[in-house]
Image (cartoon, rainbow, N blue to C red; front, side):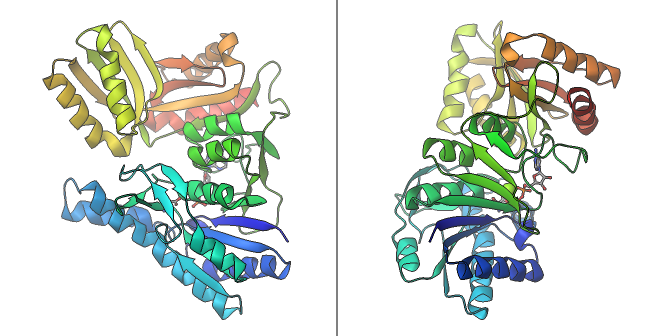
Length: 397
Ligand code: ADP
Ligand code: ASP
Ligand code: MG
């Protein structure tokens, strides 16, 4: 009798019909004898709608209140799913993140999980019940409600699986698994049977929204068997594995994927002097603000920030400028990261050269780029990002 954590994303629970079909799937897994913990996201676009609602009443909503608001989304779906299960004769009980003992730090909207108590979840399983847990949320030591960042329900699921010592964590979504590019942008994208933790982290960090990057880090660190599957069919999906044993996509590089991320924006910071670069990085680290594809040269820092955090970034950068650390900064709201993920980029300039050449053939100009061992990222105009992904995918696969 395996203990399985199953997570169902927003589209999988987007309507009452979808919720009922998720309940049917859970009932089948129960009938097969498995013990189950189910993590749910908010229904459909609920989280986006709640954010829009907040923006209609406040220009700069307090982060604490945003967390109070946004956690309501998952609370709705957990209760509805539990009802649908009870209706099917499956004994189920729903819990908020706080009731599940998901203890996080204090950082509202970008909280990190510190530990999971999970007593009530364990008790429910011991009582032969299906425990339904609201994704994406936790509680700080000061009893403040927090959220884990957009897409964070995946991380709730894997962290719970680690804490409970589950045999498997299944992420159910609206596509068949992890592809070499977003299948909505590149219909010919290749579905991977397996993908390594390291390459999956790179894909997720650089815009492959199918998994939350921190969920993959958790899976790697705590050795949680993790797979991504379609909630609408019985296909096998993609398993995230330790070793990279992927088929190659191209003659010499092993390309895993191509991503673009319109949820990020390029930021340029002109420092007062090169020695104060750490002032910006320290602020970002304290506030858990990510700096994707950071480059630093001649007193200038460039990186991709999360678009949603622009207001917060601006406050930090204005403050640093007022203290004499910066001369100026700029948000290039039209420039987004386009990345190619795969093995051995840092050792071979040819990959970057081919990316720039392919983009140039589509009249897409590249203004900055950076490479690391597993990925290369360039800045492209947002309106051309999808065309760029299509062209690069066609060239490399
Ligand atoms: P959920 O609500 O289930 O969490 P998400 O929207 O967060 O779903 O993630 C699933 C979506 O991720 C897919 O619909 C797909 O469009 C998108 N996606 C982006 N890149 C990839 C990729 N490389 N492989 C699979 N899906 C991807
Ligand atoms: N509902 C949250 C979001 O839309 C969390 C999640 O779906 O994972 O970001
Ligand atoms: Mg998601």
